[in-house]
Structures are given as structure tokens and as C-alpha cells.
Length: 393
Image 1 (cartoon, rainbow, N blue to C red):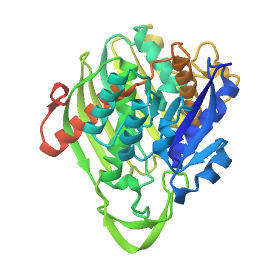
Image 2: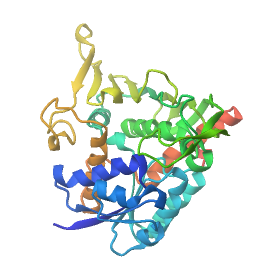
Image 3: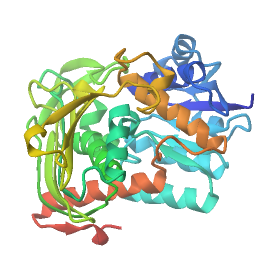
């Protein structure tokens, strides 16, 4: 069996999810290439040896520049904070490597544009980890729309609500615009923009009515390094620093196929731990997805006689009828968050092995379209007017 040496650039929360994915994919799937967990990069203070030993990486390094150029590496997978996506990605591409990157593709639109152009010129394969496309229920929703089961899409409602970022949380990198690019907007709206584009098959053509708000203006400065979770690091002293990103962003949108939509991202929506939701209303039917019940899809078939119309709960765990789950467990033996990453690792290996993915994977250019929507929403929020996407290059 042919193999692919993978290098992981970064550790932390996403480093754990990606390490688990690369460690599991060969066991549960039969990809055309076997993933080899070759080397992980981490800063010296992160103790990359400890991370490598724990997660099964064969080697570790504190020198990402040499790593991404190594002739032994076939795929560079980047999970650093957003501002550090572009440098290793461009270096890997220049070395002719396939490159995968966490979302959003970059901390700024200009960085994202440069990454897209570098990949285009080098003609290398690129991938972005919009992992919610790999949920079986979301894949089924995509298929239902593509088959015409919803008719013409009229309404899109998307929200990604979390409640972890209360005032007890210190000043993490996620609250620093120079490191993260944005707050809830880039972290959460990026996911639901991509998911809406994927499921509807439509692009967003115009953004309007945008609101951005930072509720907690200052946070206590941190000490220590990431422990691997969203909330990591400890308050280092009584001193505080400014929060330079948003806590919540809401906006309205028009789609290329005529649908209208609303998007909301929030990190202080009390009672919502990870409520990533999408609802589509069409002329023949409707769907609802909620990641807090990720194994289910709600489907409404308006073509049935009115007397028997109603919402149906589909348990998306039947192998053969629902994507990916045939490689996991029997019906209703539920899968979780980490499985979306394993599913994507499988599809990356399929593409690099010359096969088609189960569903389209965003490459850098695809993810750049989502980044353009993020940019348009922030322009609309800052300047107080609607923004057509053809104005955002």
C-alpha cells in the first residue's frame, strides 16, 4: 500500500483533533494512500516531544521552515492560530507540497488571496478543514437539495452559538485581532457560511444589515501555554489587556439563486454550548440541522398530502444510505465531533490518491469565497451599508 507522510504544523485544540484523525483514518477506512504521522511542529515551550509521544507522531521539531520543505513530507497540515496560516502554507506550496489548513483560511483577506494565488501558480492540491461538511446529516442535506427534494430554496437561516467566552476567560489569542483576524465571526460564521454554500449549492451575492459587537472590552492577561482546549491558559496577573475582536456578528444575505438568508455567530449565547444550526425552506420541502444533535436531520416533505405533512427526524446512521457511517458503527450507534475530521482525512487521502472525495472538499480558492463573505459582513457592519460580493476581491 502506498503511503503519505504527513507533517502537522501546530498543536493545541486543533492539533489534537487532527492528530486523532490521522491516527484513526487507516483503521476505519481503506484509503488509496495510508497516512503516516511523520512529524509535528510545536514551539519549544509547548513541548512538542510530549505531544508527539502522546499522539503517535514519529518525529517532532521546533523548526517549521525546514519541516515544510523536507523531501520526506507529502502533505503539510496547518493548525496554528490564524495569523500563522499563510507563512507555512506558502512555504509548503513553494516546495511543491500538498497543503491542508484549518479554517478560516487566513487571518486576513489579503493573506488568503496570496495563498490562493500561490497554490494556483504551483498547481498543488490544497484543502481546508470545514469539518461540518463531513457530518453524515449535512451530507444528506446536500444530497436532498441536489436531488431537488426541497425545490427552489427561498430561505436560509444559519446560526452558530456558543457560551464559553464569559468574563472569567482570560485574554487568549482568540481575542487578539493580530493573531485571530476576528472573533466569533471568523471562528463561527466561517463554518456556517461554508455549510450554507455547500448545502444550497449557491453563492452569497450580497450582505447587508450587519452588526458587530464586543461585549467584554478587556480581559485578564494569560500565562502558560495551551492545554489543548478552546479555553486554555491561565490568568497571569491582575493586569488586563484590550479585546480587539468581536464577541458577536449578525448579518443578512442574498444568494445567487434567489434565496435570502440570516447568519448569527456568538460566543456568549448562554445555554448554547455548540449550537451550529442550519435551516433551509424551499418550495417543495425544508430541512433543519443542529450540531448538538449531529446524528439527526429534520426533513419536511411538502409534496405529501397536506393531511400527513410534518417534520420527520432522520437518524443519519445507516451505512449505505448515509455517507461515511458504514465505516463506523451499526445503526444508531452514534458518532461525534471527532469523526468529521477522520471523514475529511479519508477524503483528503482519496483525492491525493487519485480518487474523487465523498463530497467536495474546499480547496484554498473555495475557502477564499467564504473569506470574502466574512470580509463583506465586516465592511457592512463598520460602514453601515450593504455590500455586493463582486466589490470584495
